[in-house]
Every structure is written in C-alpha cells, then in structure tokens.
Image 1 (cartoon, rainbow, N blue to C red):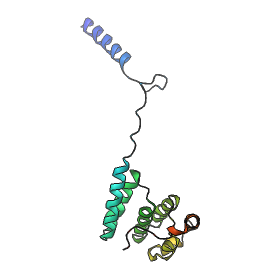
Image 2 (image 1 turned 90 degrees about the horizontal axis):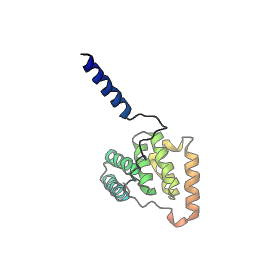
Image 3 (image 1 turned 30 degrees about the vertical axis):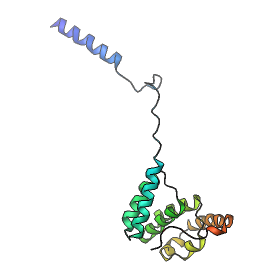
Image 4 (image 1 turned 180 degrees about the vertical axis):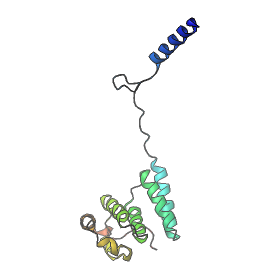
Length: 153
C-alpha cells in the first residue's frame, strides 16, 4: 500500500509539473491572429439585405445589415437604410448608431435624410445634430452625391 501511495504521489507531482498554467511569465506560445472578416461575404450580405429591403422585409433586412456590418460591410447607403429601418421599428438609439455610421462612411444625401418621414422622431434626438453636420460636410465635399442610391420603398 505504501508503495502504491508513493507511485501515485510521484505521478501527481509529474502531472503538476507538466500542466499548463496561466502564468503570464511563461507564455505557451504566440497568440493566434484574429481572422479578418471576409469582405466578399459582407458585400453579399449587404446586397441580400438590400433585396429584402426592396421586398418590404424590413426586420429581415435589418438583421442582415447587422450581420454584414459585423463582417465589414461599410456602404453608406446601406448603413443609412439600416438606420431608417431601425427608426421605423421604433429604435431611435439604434437608428442614430446606423445613421452615424453612414455619415462616417461618407453618406451625403442630405435632402433625402432631411425629408425621410421615418426619421421624424430621430431628428428630435440630441444626437441628430452631429449626424446632420457630418452629412452636410459630406454633401459639401461632393454635391453630386446628394441622392441615395439604395432602393426606395
């Protein structure tokens, strides 16, 4: 019995000595590189969201715009329409996020944005001023871009 306990103790010590620890002083190797999003997949999802938008399937379109954005989709018109859909669904905060993203990506259809009835409640929010200012600056850079190219609905 004593011999068995000794063997078990030695095995336990050996196992402890070779077990990986989370000690930062002894790293286990290089950290894996993050996998970059697939731009072609993001474009595909964005195009599919545009199609759903044309078909009037707004909730499905917004779902795909979210997924496409997470995969790298950055088309300003698509981001704008995601903001419009969110506003139609009553989510002012999400709408502001999408519209801010659209403005940051160069959305310049100031007249379209100011006349969209779905954005009436969003225009009352304090965050609207920054977005309108950015879109105005984008429109002033290139006045020919003062029209949205995504599908009308």
